[in-house]
Amino acid sequence: MSPHHPKDVLEAAQAGHIKLPVCDHYCGVEARMLKSIQLQEEMTEEFGVCVFDVTLDCEDGAPVGGELEHAHMVSELALSVKANARIGVRVHPIHHNSFASDVHTILQKAGKKISHIMLPKVDTYEELTRALHDVNEAGGIHTPIHVLIESPKGIANTFEIAAHPRVQSISFGVMDFVSTHAGAIPSSAMDLEGQFTHPLVLRAKMEISEACHANGKVPSHCVVTEFKDTKALSKAAKTAASQYGYTRMWSIHPDQIRPIVEAFAPDASEVERASEIILAALKADWAPISYQNQLHDRASYRYFWNLLEKAYATGRVLPDEIRLLINENS
Image (cartoon, rainbow, N blue to C red; front, side, top):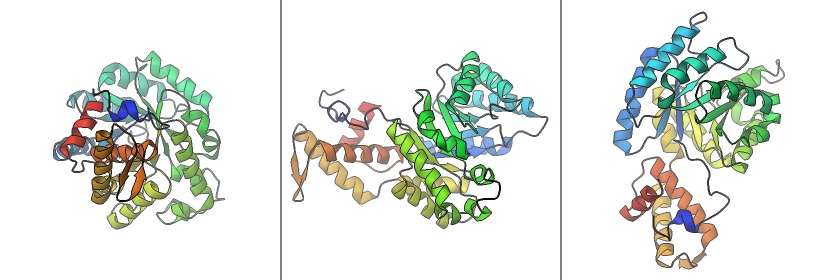
């Protein structure tokens, strides 16, 4: 890597921040899992980079009484994917009888193919620690951990949970969050419009976003259940990204994946501007420059470099010089 590479020069608050695909696609039925894995492979070839994770769901996907069989099926699917696939698994909550068997079955059988384990309904740092004990015992000591926060208690402990070194990402479970208020929040707060207007829901979203950014983790926005309305989904995704600082979002239907990727991708004009500024800065050995009668230095260089990394992660067209720099950083 060049001694003048942005990674070495632009040391900043954002240095070391975790980077993940902008979309996390959930599926709980075997046929949909197979289709999702195939779609990931096709879109990775199309975009030149993996733009979404596939998370195989044991919590809501397993039939009652068939949890162990479901975990074995998930393991077999994970084992069958190609080396560059990104396949995560959502296990049952730590308090569920199937949590330990989920973790041990999946990690011992297919641990090397698992990109992350999603732990749902985490309320405290202590619960996270107990869950990690089982994950480690099953051989997942190096398996990245994603956390799903779904209650007021979890929101109250978000910063502490986000600070754990094993945690890569925190997601917000809007439906369970509303439900745990025992009717104090109307059901409309689960809907597309309500989840962006109800004060308690918005506060929870902002707590998660801030906790993640403060600790270099990835905030992942909750589901939009109106999966047929892709126009509304796009608006929600853009709002989550531009107003609430989310850098990732859940998908629960294949039709949601492309709109989410597009919404989280920088505009072409932003990419062009950022590329020109970074290339000019590189030529100036990262000294301040003038670009279109505006001063830029390392503070703004950091912003534009991060924008270009996001452009790369969402399959945007980049100048060859920029793509080479990003590949050097990979």
